[in-house]
Image 1 (cartoon, one colour):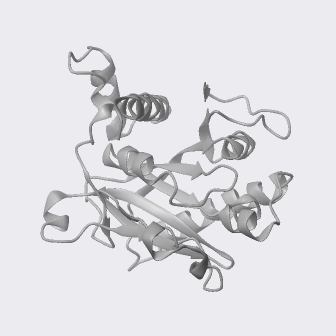
Image 2 (spheres, rainbow, N blue to C red; image 1 turned 180 degrees about the horizontal axis):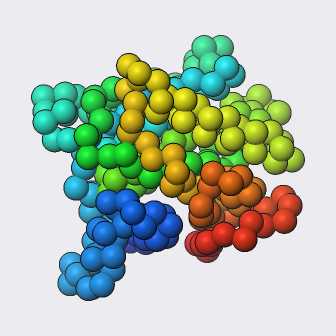
Amino acid sequence: MSNSSRRLRAAVLASFVLLIAACSSDSKPAASASSASSSAAPTGPVYAKEGPYKVGYTTLHLPDRDVAVWYPADASAVEGRPQATYDQTTPLPDDLKALVPAEFNRVVTMNAYTDVPASGAGPFPVVLFSHGLSAYRLVNSALDVGVASWGFVVVAPDYLEHGLVAQVRGTLNMNTSEVDHATASKTLDLVTAENGRSGSLLHGVADTSHIAAVGHSLGGRTSFDIANDPRVAAAIGWAPVAPSGAPADKPTMIIG
């Protein structure tokens, strides 16, 4: 990762954590954000580094699409476990995987661990992350892992109608705001259900009374639209597309 990429990642991550924490006044990350922002570290932004938690990773399933989830975990839970990986064919259905030549099928290793127990220090605020045009649920994984390490449950659904597979098949469509809003809403329903389900990996982990929506590019539109949902307290758009309707009267940040 280049120095400029690190600075951008640090700036975006810091913005996410500070705004979300400000809307979660009774959560643990809020205290961390307050102390971190009160003094400038000589080595650069504190959020350029991973947070105090290790990160677990799992996949939830809506009827027609997958949802990636990153969540805080304790060091003892990940000791001796391999880090989670994905490759360039992961978002593709079986009939398209052969399009990626073996020499270009790069494996990405996340600083996260598959299906490890969550930290008992929660519950943790929820971040709904919406990817941009021609992307998929894992494309911003480094950023999602970084946010989760500071004490957040990050959930990222596939927006199939304007995602990578639609790009490959030639069915890409930007006029999907209603479908995207429904996908975001169903994702919050799913996380809430898993949080309350005994035996779930996420049982009791998510603080569903504190939810923020974050989106990149076309996903920024989704984050602004879903901010009208009473469950969502704040919205952040990273180089965002404008909302499809009236914006919510809630704390909002635009990162240009």
